[in-house]
Length: 164
Image 1 (cartoon, rainbow, N blue to C red):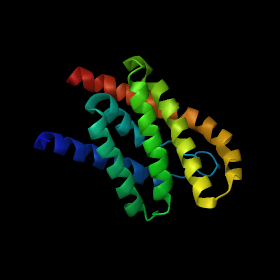
Image 2: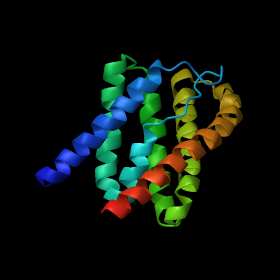
Image 3: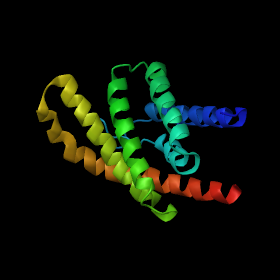
Image 4: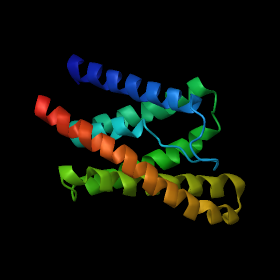
C-alpha cells in the first residue's frame, strides 16, 4: 500500500469512528432498543463503491474494533462484528448488480443483513432462538435506516466521482 492510500484509509476510519461515537451520544430517535441510523456506514458505502473491498474491509474492521474500545462496549463487539461483516459481504455482492443510482438499495439490503447478523449473534450468545421474534422490528428499522444512509452514501459517491 502506498502512503497516500494508507493515509486515505486512516482518514476515512477516523471519520467513520467519529460519526459512530457522536451518534452514540444522540438520544434514540425511536424508543426501540437497538434501533439507530448507523451513519458511520456512509463511509463504508463510500469505501465499498470507490476504494474496493480490501480498503473497505480495513476501514470497517478498524471502526468496529476501535468503536468497541472507545465506547467501552466490548460485549457489543461480537454483535457489531457479526452484523458488520455480514452487511459488508452482502454489499460487496450487490455492488456487482446495482448501478450508482441504486446504491441506496444496496444499503437497505446491507442494513437488513446487518440486523440478521446481529440477531444470529444474539441467538449464539443467549442460546435462545426466541430473540428472533424481534427480527421483524429490526428489519423495518433496517429498511428505514438503510435508505437514509444509502441515499447519503450515494450522494457522497456521486460527488466524489465528479471530483476525481
